Length: 224
Image (cartoon, rainbow, N blue to C red):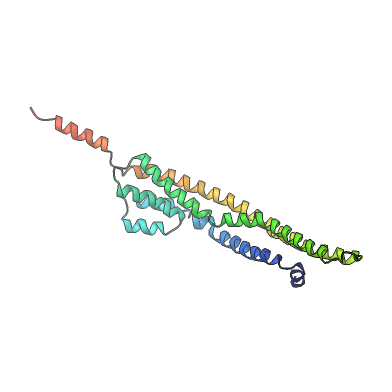
């Protein structure tokens, strides 16, 4: 491998850097996008159970936000109801959607970089091959004959860059598509959890219209 790298010339070094970065991103995303880490299976039921009779304190909401990505989304809904007791269903839904967009952005971290490596590696390999071919044909004597065996060996060495670029790009593209699918599934799980939490939290929202009707009825029911 070392002899191949030395023979391929300087254009292979950017490809080696891309391979190291791509491998690091793949390992990091494999660890970070574990479903149990993003969507703890019992967290939603625990939150609903804790807030069944009353809303939790803000310190509990803060600890929930630090638990996981799902915890951040659920904590956003709880905080919205605590800070605005007269919140409407539309306002609570917007709070969940805002937290969901931030969570989706967090889950998609580094995926653009991995996709860029998958797209750029073949082009970088082709560039290295072109540079190698230019050096090979430029080294040939203008008036002298060329050795076909030596020329064929030089071309094969120049093609190392293209081959190495494809070796990097194919796994990077496969993992990029895989991670995109994982993120889509996790986002759907977050949306379903928010939809389940929405009616539960609306029980604690003060109905301003109902309160006004009650007050009006009380004012009108004066004794004769």
